[in-house]
Image 1: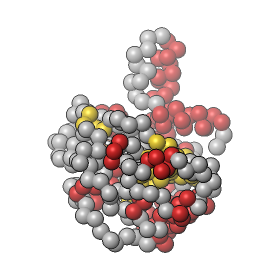
Image 2: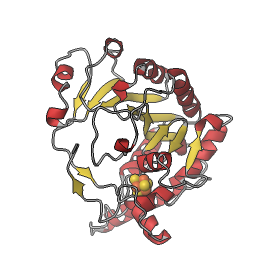
Image 3: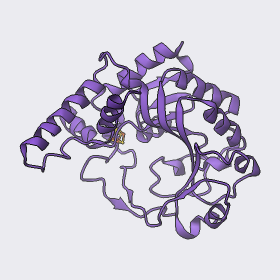
Image 4: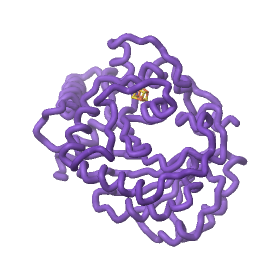
Length: 298
Ligand code: SF4
């Protein structure tokens, strides 16, 4: 990606409408206007460049099994029953291959759950993602309750692979084990991270204007691949899966049914052009109700 494209991409990914509005001088006002115009341009489905094929994060749900039952889990994992049935690594790797066919680059490909280390063949999936030249970093997101299997440890040393540990204090009993393994790359979250109330998938009866405003305040575009379907965010993915609501066409992509990379890219453009999603009416993100809750409460 050229330098100016990279800068514009980063600005539009991380900038927020209104972030610059408190700044008074003319220069910053022009900057804020430029930011808004570029954000609109990049979100437009027919714009001529290829930015839409670049992603900051894509997350893969590898299992809904978990070792914890967190009350405020934003993936609503406590509503799934633990199961011994897993999609095979061949199926998951097929989904990943199809998806990567339709995009040009993803900064960070995260593998999560549930607790991803419960997935027996996780190393095969990690290896598959690492093989792709379209992926920057691969990150396994764990709650620190399970020891790393030798198959995972053997994937190191690798600068493109990281274990990200959500630190829930006493619950995350294996953290010191990870920290004392010199060969692996580990990021341990600082304890006491703030969790938020996502709304428990309860319908909120907001009108379109309210939903647009809410979506403009949301972090957005945290794509999640779940059982062959790509959604814009975790609430869309897990809420649909739990049948809390039915997403409309253009709110998700059935990766397995996409004929080729071009078709997938066109479908992904339509997701990115949306102004809000069905899921937003079942979610508190971007509203005053998005209040802090106790992290990892069992
Ligand atoms: S449901 Fe809407 S508001 Fe909630 S996280 Fe997803 S995109 Fe954002």
